[in-house]
Length: 374
Image 1 (cartoon, rainbow, N blue to C red):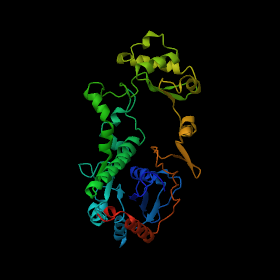
Image 2: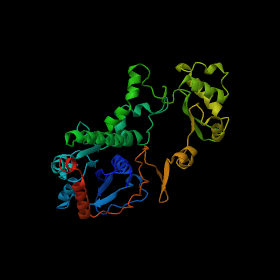
Image 3: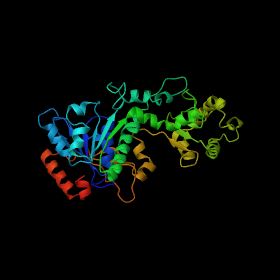
Image 4: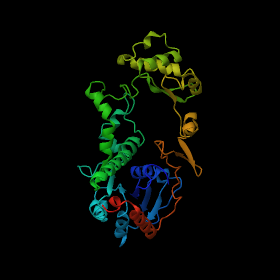
């Protein structure tokens, strides 16, 4: 294994969505992540979120299973779970018994609504969690309903990534205190945090509550997507005056006075129609020849098949082939400790519980005393 988190041991209580994505981030960076799954759970090699880790099959309701997991917890650094509040406690694997076995354990909890609050026990999904943060309201076209941004904002951005950040923050603090702690990552909190800049804009009177009429939500004619002659799309984001001037020049509208007042919001609806007419005069590839790679802040809108083949993504290795399946590569990049190409889900097979326990215990004994004996 390679990467900056080599030597870190993480237990993942297998779930769906943000929990596996968070565990994937740790595995990508070199941590040894063990997925604890129910017996009979199939392993799908196409499940990209499950890549790079071993699987331990445990029937958590069977006699002795709680003790088996606690024995593994004793040699772990992190545990990640994404059940409803109270489920892990009922299984005998809540923070109290786990940290009694391992006081340095960082216990990461991933939920939509959080561990407490009026909605904590309610079912929900990404769209519900971002709805109460204000984020969903802001996404969409003027005079149309809000548009779900897939599950990027709640599950992955406001959920999994902030859980990973919280766990690493707790690990850093534990180096000073010698004690672990519980990280309560709620997607409602995370989606609200991702909206910090826009709440700032609103406080400064620079953002309205009307979607599709603002600087970054498609309201501006210079920050939007446009259809081309072939039905494909391009994206422009020429916010700064010098970039806007170059966009006008390359689009052949530099001498059109209608476009002079860039920040006149009253003119944006009309100018958007004018810009749409301009972009319909050429195909997407023709616009790429004119604009891509310039300071006009331009990019083609690529689909799932096209993106891995784009020259920039190829040059950076943004996508990798793992046993015939296209995977987004681990990110970000590191100068000294680059992560390895990930293994497909199931590539390391099912782990034997007794063997895992012996291996982790031996690794614990080989650690410096201040880590092995908190």
